[in-house]
Structures are given as structure tokens and as C-alpha cells.
Amino acid sequence: MRRLIGCTLALFFFAVTHVAGQDTPVAPTGLIQLFNGQDLTGLTTWLKDTKRDDPRKVFTVKDGILHLSGDGFGYVATEKTYKDYHLTVEYKWGKRTDGGKYVRNSGILLHATGPDGGAGGTWMASVECQLAQGCVGDLISIRGKDAKGDVIPVALKAKTVLGSDKRPRWSKGGEVRTFTKGQLWWNKHEAGFKELLDTHGKDDVESKLGDWTKVECICRGSKIEIIVNGTKVNEAFDVFPAAGKILLQTEGFEVDFRRFEIRASK
Image (cartoon, rainbow, N blue to C red; front, side):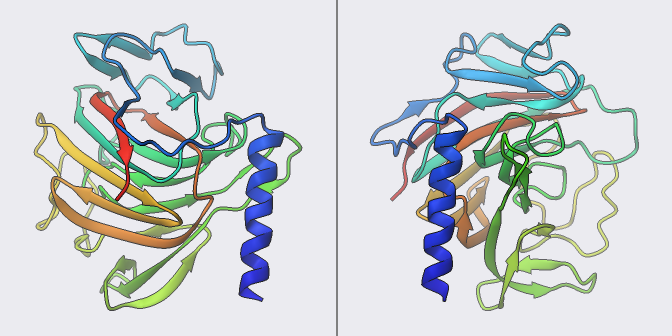
């Protein structure tokens, strides 16, 4: 039965990538700069309210920095689809917030599949590596719909333990749990963390406000590992889809990216 399910998902992913007009996924053999430091060549943009148009200049490039103003919800996406890669992203928060009291928020969407805005008009079906303050490295399954309106399933498994707050965290010796929605928290996410603007949990490994944070997403087959500033914080397996586009979110907060690149996963 498990083999049958795996074959069914593989056939579904083949159908999604081809019906939606996506390229055959590329596995990098050398270093690929997804952002060239000069312009948006090789990338596309999407905003929930204006779609492919960007009249407010939410996405700009200056002095080697990819700047997301935070004015609106959407993303920068790779034109091509990728598999079996080691992604490195470096980001730093700007001054703009959404005006609320909660943490600055953005994310990296991995294995993004289907049409732009296929998930609630804002995202694509994908697995999110969370970049929100205090939650960097959390993994979230984001289901979307294809061009016909059919649901694109997204799923992952992980070894987990429940914290005192009953939230599942990745743990090497934990119990296997399947996530088709909801959040897999990074291993040392502080229980009771209030998620207030510019606060840090006691074990957070992300950089302080104003400094660059380095996030690595190692996608090998159907496995994902997340490393933040050199520390492994999360891991998932039996991830589906296991290939797709790579997206950087704009989610109401100003954020800069200076490194957005992939190389072969080992």
C-alpha cells in the first residue's frame, strides 16, 4: 500500500508540473546564483492584489541587495524548478513593519508547485521554511490548487516531541508524525514564546536585529534539512512535492536578501 501511495504521488507531481507548464526540475551540478545582484533576471514576482504587476515597486534591486519593501503580500520566485539542491539564503530585516505588535515575518517557500497564487491567492503550494522572528527554521505545509481548482497535496514527516505548550518540535529520537497542514517547530523553539515584535527566544540561533542571518535548506530526494547560522534546527522526510520553484516571501515587513543561491546537495 505504501509503495502504491508513493507511485500515485509521483504521478500526481509529474502531472502538476507538466499541466501547469513548469519546467522539468533541474538538479544543480555547480553553483547557481538565483539572484545575480544586479536585477531580477531569472526571477518573477507576484502580489496578491496586483498579480504579476508591481506598481508600488515592492521588489527592487540596489547595490547587490534584493529589497522587499513589505508593502503587500506575495513573493519573488525562480523561473525554473529545482530538485536535489543545497540552498543558501542570507537576509536582514529593514525598518518597515505591518504596524502590529507581532514578530517580523517572511519565509522561504520550497518545492513551490502549481499556478501563482494557487494557495489562497497569495502563495503557491509549497513547504515553507519559516523566517519569522523566534521561529526561523519551522516547516509548514502549504496546500494549494492547480489551474483546474483541484487540490495540490503537500505533506512531510518528521520525528517529533511535544513541548509543554503541546506544539510538535523536531527531535532525532522522537515519534514520527505526518504534517499535511500546520507547523513543525524547530527543535529548540521556546515554549511560551510570545512572538512579540523584535523579541528572541532564549535558544534562538538567528542573528540580532540589524545583522544578517544565514539559512541553509538542504533538499536531497524527499528529505529537507534546515541549518540556521551553522546550527541544524529541523529535519523532515517523505516530503511531497520534492521539487519545484523556490520563493522568497514579502509578508508585511521590510526585508533584504543579499545571497540567494543553490548548489548540489551532498
